[in-house]
Image (cartoon, rainbow, N blue to C red):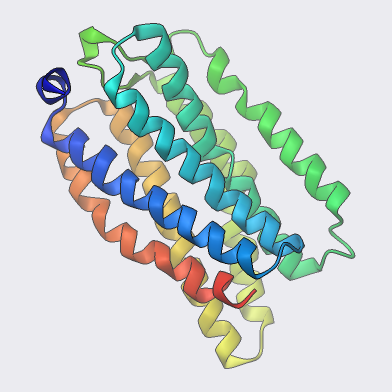
Length: 236
């Protein structure tokens, strides 16, 4: 524990144990609430999103106590993979709401999940994409190539389509109460996108001042994350 205190500054402590720790607990709670109600298609899809993020956060907290370079590298990339991968479940969730499972069948959903999962394997293959060892004070230091790959894949394949289709769904709804709930859902997923982009940029800049500022800026997003559950998931 003394070694942990010596190698971890206040910004990283806030980011890992406060921001990400609370996000992980929140997502586990939401996944439990959804699956407890029913395990139908929409519930499984949305709970998969929450569970992936929760597992990623748990791994991230665990490797904060490890100081073996190879192990830390593997766990860090695994964490980031599990933070990117569940984005596909948000897209599928919105597509089902927009098209119904009769049109966007489980087979098509699985194909989309597999394709995105394979594309994300590139996060493991970029040479010198991630450095995390004693020389970086055990903080991740990403190359700009690594950031560009992640942003390109996640933004154009998932995030932008999810936002576009969610807005399209919003205008398709005529009932005011449904519009209101979807608006909360949009705020919630936007908060997650905000955390994704901010954390990725922070790891690439690897600047102590920016890390501290970002760790504080990301705190309000925790409140917004509740809107995903309040807006849509609560009523599945």
